[in-house]
Length: 160
Image 1 (cartoon, rainbow, N blue to C red):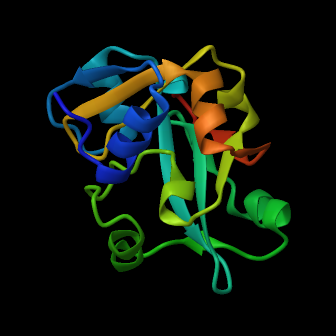
Image 2 (image 1 turned 30 degrees about the vertical axis):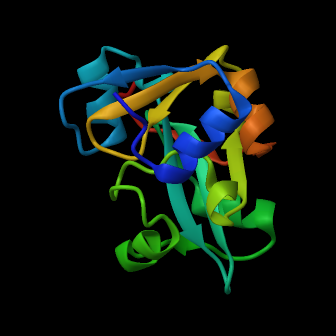
C-alpha cells in the first residue's frame, strides 16, 4: 500500500526513512484508528490544525489527549482556535479530513508536538487517509518534521 498524502510520500522516499505502512479498516477519529489497529490511544498520534491571527499551527499529540487551547496559545503567544474544515482542506489538499499526517512543514505549517508523545520510541500516525497509518521511530519523525516540543495536551478522562 502506498502512502496517500503526496507530499508525505515524497519526503519519505527522498530521505529513505524506514517506516511501516499499516492498512486498517476505515476509521474516522484517531481513537477509532487506534482501536482498529489495537494500538493504545497514547501511542497513536493525532494532528490538530489550529489557527491564530493569520497563522496556522499543527498540534501533534496522543489520540487519548486533547489540546488545551489556552496552554497552546501561551506557547505561540497568541489566542488560537480550531481551524475550519475549509481551512484544513486548503492547507492539506492531498489529505482526507481527519487523517492529517504530523508533517505540517511540508504544507508550510509549523509543527508543535506535546512532550508526552516525544517520550515514545515509535510514533504511529495517519497516512493521509482513513484506512492507512504509518509507524516509524520518533527520532526519524523528529528529524524530518522538526517540531517544537512543548506541553499543551490534556489527557481525556477515561482514555488510555
